[in-house]
Amino acid sequence: MQYLLKVEGITKTYKEKTALEDVSFSVRNGEIFGIIGPNGAGKTTLLKCIAGLLKINKGRIIINPPENRKKIKMGILLEQSFHPYISVYGNILQHLMMYGFDKKTAIRKTDEYLNQYDLTGMSNVKPGRLSLGMRQRLALIMALIHEPDIVL
Ligand SMILES: Nc1ncnc2c1ncn2[C@@H]1O[C@H](COP(=O)(O)OP(=O)(O)OP(=O)(O)O)[C@@H](O)[C@H]1O
Ligand SMILES: [Mg+2]
Image 1 (cartoon, protein in one colour):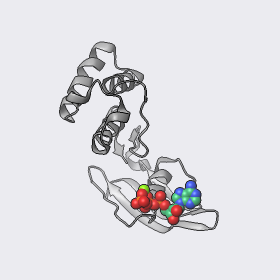
Image 2 (cartoon, helix red, strand yellow):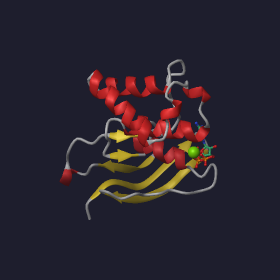
Image 3 (cartoon, rainbow, N blue to C red):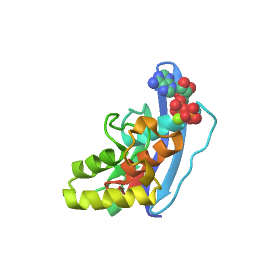
Image 4 (cartoon, rainbow, N blue to C red):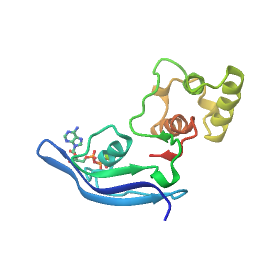
């Protein structure tokens, strides 16, 4: 089986609190894998461990196994971190340019994203004035801009 991500028996504790205990699963190339659980179950902790934002106590996480080794880009939608003082349009444009797109391409892509994610009417608004769902859509654009191989 060709997998892109494998989580093997991981445990994560915050001081005395065990947030994850012996979690194992693998995700194949092209697969959409969902994790559900009540508040506090450890979902965000798990994503942070996979992204390398938290250190695990036990087990291992294998991303991009040796047999299909190539450069892997990861996109993550966790906390919504936008620039608060620039518009929705500016946030997307700046993010694209940060990833190396030239200005002309970045402008075209910004318009495409706004249209595709139904945010065109909000392009001049600052992120703080968006509804929660709209902010999630903006965060999704930001997570996808560099065309990642894995999206968390
Ligand atoms: N920085 C932290 N320090 C200590 N405990 C933490 C920390 N972050 C999370 N926890 C604890 O770890 C457990 C898992 O939290 P986590 O945020 O991963 O849950 P979740 O499944 O994402 O919940 P939700 O559905 O509310 O987003 C909870 O008991 C939480 O209180
Ligand atoms: Mg969470």
